Every structure is written in structure tokens, then in C-alpha cells.
Length: 396
Image 1 (cartoon, rainbow, N blue to C red):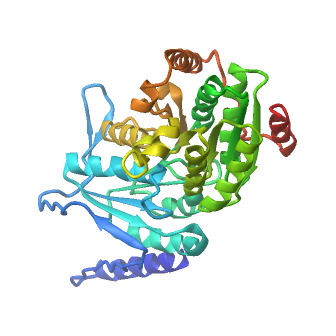
Image 2: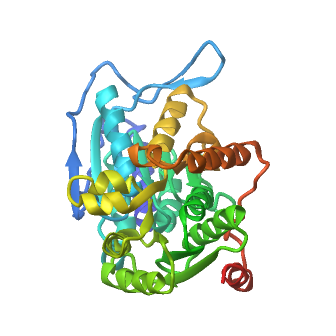
Image 3: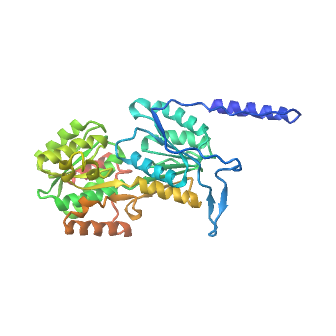
């Protein structure tokens, strides 16, 4: 930041001298940041007659619309390929670019455990490259967004799956959305409890952070809404990639009687799905359409997945982009989307449609009640450690 201020002061001095006479020109220097990987999915479109790519217009309704961005960058705090929220954001962005003809660059900043310290510098360099729109997200990007976005007030940011601190940081150019993951997990609990024959379920979380606890709290609440006497065993891998440990913990739960499992542990969930396949029990997929993921590579796992729930990041990013073009996206604010806006919930795929009608009717009933506000799903966000322990104890 000091470097930026120094450059600005130098520029002011140069312009002051130029006012006295002489022809002065300035040249912008861009520094390329070495990131883990990047992908360009379309060609740049340049128009010599365009002086402001994001020029505003006013439509018939009085809303201030903006021009279609010509250059979009998607910045991921990880790598692609997990089938989860970041892949969904990329899918939506690729569709946007294909439809609009915009240049799209997808930058993978790498895994947090090794590359987090480089994220701020990489984001600064990307903003210096003159993109018209930045799409980024994930809770791990919170600090980077809050530090970088205020330095580039002319660049709009659409942020997904992250709760930003708009009270402490001046970010009128940033729109952020997070998700009621507890609502999606609630519906997973409903399906699990309706499908269980033993009255025992299993939850496998990753790290003990509010977002993971939110999945757990929602899952337990949904299961208890169907069967107040349901038992839910809980375990944590403290890791997002240790499938072997997730498998070990899931097997212990099945040995204790659980016949439907629900993982919330990232890539480690593969171990839970393997247990469902090998032990003749079921699982609820999370963060992606797990049936689709395994239907060709491991049909036996796909057959063990009753249904999947997910944060529908692709829907949310597309909706936010369209609102941005319309001039109705509320920059400078945080919004939370869930079942009511189809931002989170059950994947209505062939596996779901194959469930007994009674299960689907129950899910539809709770979806309607959540949408109307008749059912307010409890959340772990803001809960104390004692309150979270009480939720766990209520299902033992």
C-alpha cells in the first residue's frame, strides 16, 4: 500500500510540472504474478471506440444498468477439481463468458496450507491487470478480499460463500453472498431419518469451525424433526483430504448401528462414501451431486447415495451477475441465500426421484415450511461451545 501511495504522489508531481508546458505521457506497468495455474477460456474483445467498458445506462424501470464486462477474472483460494463450491463458481462463470463473449481467466491460487501468504500479492497483481469484474469466494479468501478490494474501488467484486465484514472495511464495490448451509443439511437430516431403519445416523465433519458445525446442527435438527428419538453419532477428521480417516470414523459409526451417513469434510468424504458402498448402508452426498460424480466411475457408490444436498453456488453466481448487469445488485452488502431462493438444498436428480414418494413428500413439506418461515432452521453461527455440545448431546 505504501508503494501505491508513493507512486500516486510521484504522478501528482509529474502532472504538476506538465501543467507548466511540455508534452508528458504516462505508461502503466503491469507485473505478472506467478500463480499455481490459470485458464483463459475466450479471446479478448477490444473496441477502439469504447472509452468506458462499465459505462452505466438507465433502463425503463429507472434502475442503473451497466455494460457487459469484457474481461472477467475468477480467483480461487484452492485448485479446481473437487466438484464443490469453487467448481460450481467456475461453471457459472464459464457459462457467463460463453454467452457474453467476455474474456475469462480462472486463477487457482493453490492450497491454503502452502499458498495463503501469496494470495494478497496475487490478487493485487490481478487487479492491476485491469479486469472489469472479479469473481471470488470461499471463507479462506475473507482477509484477502477485505484488504485488496478497497484499494480498487473502480473494480466490482462478486464474492460467494464468504461472510465479509462491511462494518470494518469500506467496500462499496463488493457484493458478498453466503449460504444457509444449515438449511441444506436440515433437508439431508429429513431424508436420512425417513430412510433409516435403525434409528441411528452418522455425521462426519472436517475441522471444528462454525461452517462445519452449521452443517451438523442443521442435520441433527432435520433428523429430529422427523424422529425426535433419532440418534446421531458425530466425528471429525480435522482435515479436508484425509479420506482414510473419514473411512475409519464412518466404519466405527456403522459398526455402532448407523445406517445413513452424512459427511461434511470436503474431499475426505470419499472415505465415507466407500463405507456406504462396502457395508451396505447409505449416505447423503454433500457439496455436489455425488450421484453424478460416481455414476460412471463407481456405480456401486452412486447406488449407495440416497440423495445429495449442496450450496447452489452456480445458481447464486449467475443470479448475482444478472442483477449486476441490471444495476440492481446491492454492492456494499452481505446477503444470505438458501432454500427459499434455490440457493441451497436438495439436488433433484434421478436418485432423488427414485426415493419413496413419502420421503419426497416430507422433503417438499419442509421446503415449503422453510420458505414460508414456519420452520426456522437452527444455526451454529454464533453458538457457544456449550450450546454446540448441547446439540450433540440431544441426539445421543
